[in-house]
Length: 386
Image: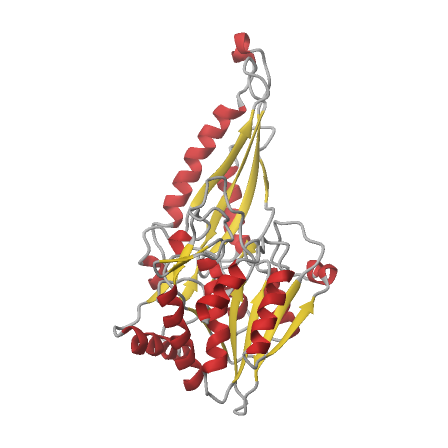
């Protein structure tokens, strides 16, 4: 039944900005399992006006979220979290044709969103139905994680009275309690146009950008040279700085007078986005006029952390060890996630999920069904001990 439900959910295309049909499918599953499900519609204008609005990159006219509740008697409340929005399917052909096939082959379930992170959502749902613990369990199935986290932000604006939280991102069964932040930047590098035959009369924006690119590489090395957080220090590159898009020039026989680059800036655990932005802008400045302009569009993923020795982290690690038969690794990750939104409200939080983060956002995204079943058992152990 777990694999069947996951296949149904994967077959519902839910690109960021268009998630309602996935929530409707999940709500039907929850009610079939005897759980209470409610789809919420949030006030976008109010959320966008909030001083802590986490940013957005995808146009949307509505924001919905699903809350599934398993009542409890102990007075304690545990939140489970997973997002249903997915990224685009790419331009390469998929193994089973339809990127949303939900096809099952040799123990794997294929489709966009399978591992990132509909598997985690389905695992949470089935764990809630199977557990016997006395705490109230609330599943936040959310939208808009991929472009900033507005769905979880909205859910916590509505109700943040939780004693702890688990985000079921694909962590390879590591217990993750520290995550880097991430910011999207856009830099416009001006130059001066001229005929190619008289290029010395111009100032190539591309040449100016090449010098900037070198400074950005140096800045990445500096940020990662002395990493303070012990879990982040274990990573090969905790805080990447990547230029993902470059555009410039209008004519092959002209000196380009503008280059625009967009990319992603990692934000260290313990730092604020404002500190990271100021340091980046200082590196970008080269003293020339007109100055290079920097903008910060899209989502703003703050870093987040729960102390590695927090009792809740130990409780999750014990559940993983019981299931997997080996001590759980407590780790940090270099990517943004909704963990930090719980941490920001003082809620101890950890992430744990299946293998396969390297297959997220890729063609032929897939998840091992055995991993999903294992995650269900881990979550049941946590719920029953909470």
